[in-house]
Length: 537
Ligand code: NAI
Image (tube, rainbow, N blue to C red; front, top):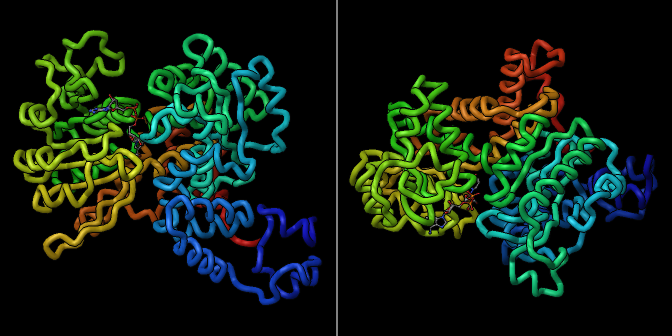
């Protein structure tokens, strides 16, 4: 057992100034701490005060990062008990600042870098990782970080931040999480010519060589930690779908961008249909942005219409329209991407969003494009003209990339729109009515899916698991939430949401013979008992 200076320097064990006088005597801490002990609540109050006093998001994020490196329990206490205030600093939008400045202000070793230059000896490199037990891995190659593009190894704060949310929301032990960044180069010219960039300065490795390298990476990880669940995060469009196909039926792994986003979008659409007293299959949905998140969401929506409402797959696909950087996705498009094929319509090509909306008459417009302010006043007004209750989800992150603000959507539709955003926005006071546009953030989904894979020892994560997650989230939206224009439960309930999702996925997997462990009678209670709590022990 650690005592004295060694104890308070160990972030995973330290209680900082919260040690009582008798604990200080017993543990050799007398004189090593400011004399008066405080409670964790008082520590949290002081930390929040300091965080609030920082001028910029970046400074706030750095403060939180240093707190995490000094006192893990206090960091997670803040994230769990002050989630609405701390989440935007611990993850989006502030994490974007940490990424953009990563190489120039690297301070704490956190996570593992696996480089193309180390191919053939990845197992050897992984031997340097001190953790004997790793349960949850989030991995990126930095190719498409948030809506910011190729940030190379500067993307490391993303897997590190996501794993923080795993611990805070689904209670995965922090000591058993491992962020991994794959360095296969970068095509970002700025970094290629920046002598302070900390990754290898060469263009990205592509094609066969890339996938063979990833095979070695995943094999080596599974050799060292066979039970670990792997989440793929922010891989580029050209690789993300193939990687998922390469590994999804062999290992317990999933892509948050493709599957997690789809799941949270479907949850919001189930709530919107409930508010409108309609069915998912009655909606006509136009996705503005047809990359990983857009087509992943379209696929999940089709499967929801099919499984929940019995709509045949081809009929469900007819309800969905894609629009990307080249305009409306039509069957006349040369070199149609396989992921676009089911949704390509026999219509004339059109690059104008307003004109497409007038032709298609969508009930729902979903932004997953990375193009900030793309939903202009004209776009929003047309949605309001053709719908009594238009559903408008500007889901791109961070805030500056949001296709519109909730305020703009409410103003253009006279407060009739049902809105969910990707990044956090404040509530609105519109004509005397308080509207709370909650976040359609996959942070409700992936920590729970990972937890289910882990506790249920599932051999793989299947599409139906994400559908169960969508339904569980939607079921937790109350009538009061809907009355306030909220399509998701408040983030304050995120641990309860994650617990329910994980339990429901495990129970369903057991029913379908995909879970091979003995389950206790009270699966909910058991899941809860396995979750890390940020309390001093
Ligand atoms: P991606 O790069 O795979 O796809 C972007 C898509 O937008 C492509 O289809 C592209 O053609 C299209 N696009 C780009 N410029 C356009 C323009 N001017 N007009 C029309 N379409 C345009 O990126 P991915 O992974 O699909 O992510 C997109 C956005 O969604 C990002 O900002 C990301 O932060 C956000 N996102 C939000 C999530 C949430 O939970 N709210 C989860 C995952 C992603």
